[in-house]
Image 1 (cartoon, rainbow, N blue to C red):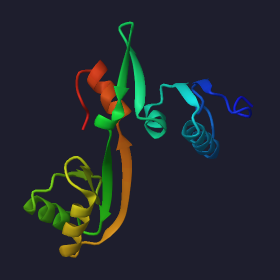
Image 2 (image 1 turned 60 degrees about the horizontal axis):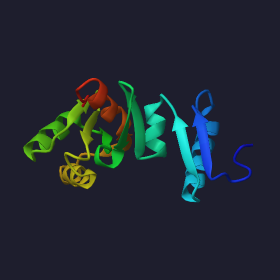
Image 3 (image 1 turned 90 degrees about the vertical axis):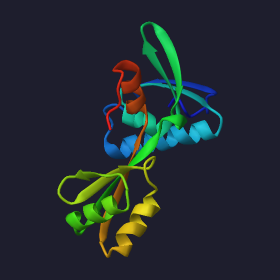
Length: 155
């Protein structure tokens, strides 16, 4: 109801918490649409994955101070590529000096900051390795949080 009058400022505490997936998706789309129309939206949330989907500007509270962070310089994507022949793919990618990790039994994982997705696709295709599926995940808020609060990065 609060968005019916198209507010200029919207303050929300955990707006997606407890929603079913469809409602969460709809609420996220509404918030992004309001922001695109000029509404300033301040969201308090502990769900860093949702923050990654909503904004590139975040604020952390640390030792009584507010730290403003722009995730544009920290955000990246992780790709998970399901392939037909893991051993062959490992050999081919290593041969081409492409950084990756083995993920489960039939996937490789890599960061877009290490190699372009198209490079991996082209390399695997040239080696006749079938790509069955590609999933991507945006990584940003959690990585920056860990740097600020734990002093390390999980890769």
